[in-house]
Image 1: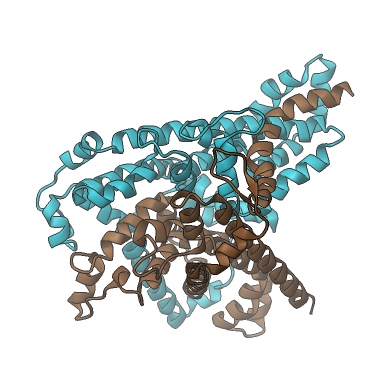
Image 2: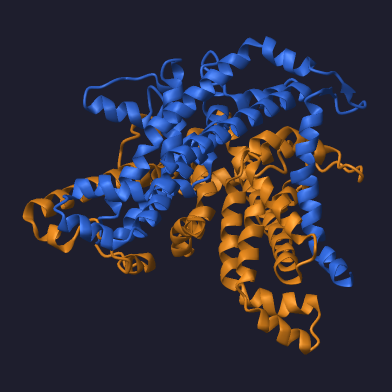
Length: 304
Length: 286
């Protein structure tokens, strides 16, 4: 079995010397390593891939089989109709559409806020910039659960605006913009763009908006791609805030719809729904596998 | 001056979002804790009434102990596992990528999907777990249906769902350990276990301490697992602090009590972080 993946080849570059070549020449050590590696791989396949594969299988199994023979490796009949039934009969179809709308809106909000703020703080550097940046970063210290209730009451009656955003997509989109971690990432990236480039552009008469749109953003494509992917996935996975902010079933994302459906609907349709809800993040995972897997370590890498 | 105005223009989206949805709720939360509101009439100042109401509610003590139990159990199971896994995975050469994808796979699923999937697995009659354990003559176990095992079942699911990110973070930290350290230890005759114990783990100390704190803060805010899997049951065995806050606000409509409880959670988390940072700094100094 060969799985040539980008991360696979990269991983060989930093040689981890915990186990030295000399250790590997010893028969006993080699056997012990090979067997623990095999056992761990087996465990990972069983416990990490297993539930996901089970979900794939059960999603296309006849309803009865899921409860009578849950351990069967293969369904006796494959029922792809479960998937279309789940989409059509239940609220899952609209849930998926709502999840997509919410994710894209959150992405737009986060990109607008983080690039404009990052540009102002990194390139324009106003006098109050440092204070503002500190205030933005301070929000990282506030646990999200603690602000849930006041956030709901704020959204429910926006101070000074007199609007109620509850049960509109704005209630999820706009708060998503207040993401300090993205501001931090983007500002740091902008900080590393050589200042001479900006000077040259300014001499050529470029205003700040041209600078941002024509120069900074095109240069930042890699970091924007990573931020976008993580934003989309995080928004798709979000549960508690949409649960609170969107009580109208027609507006709820699939994550909020599923637990409600699970209480009443036919089990194989519920599992088909679980499967459908997992496809978009898993697809993103497959497409951006290297960025995901390396991004995790990279984030903390910069923090030390 | 003009430059500052241009900068403000660029900062408007951030000022709007952070102002309304990050900074203002902090102020509002403080205010609400001492108020009663029904969302229609103007809020009324009630002093410490909300806090008294909470302290009189016997469910609060249950929720606090349950949450502490969840966090403790999650720490006991979910903290050493990724570390051990990362050390092991760092010795893998062939298929290293495959190991990473597998361990990260559960993290990619929406939490609700993982929770609902495990709820099916935990079914006493038709669930995968009891069927599989039955093959080797164990069980059947009641999992979520018993007050004794419900919380443990939630912890197992949460550990499964979160294992991947911690493992990859440790793995990245392990690859940054300088090879010379291992070489020196090997020259001094240290075996692999001693190298793990005396080099890898001490070198990871910073990452370990950070993740420990983050995990604690995260698990003390647990909501999705008890809300979706057990709805706090059986007999309130899995009711947690955040679940209770949710019920106060959105079932009973008592936003004052919910805010007061949030404030107490915030205070507990800050105190925990402060004590933790103080303790680890002292420990690092010596």
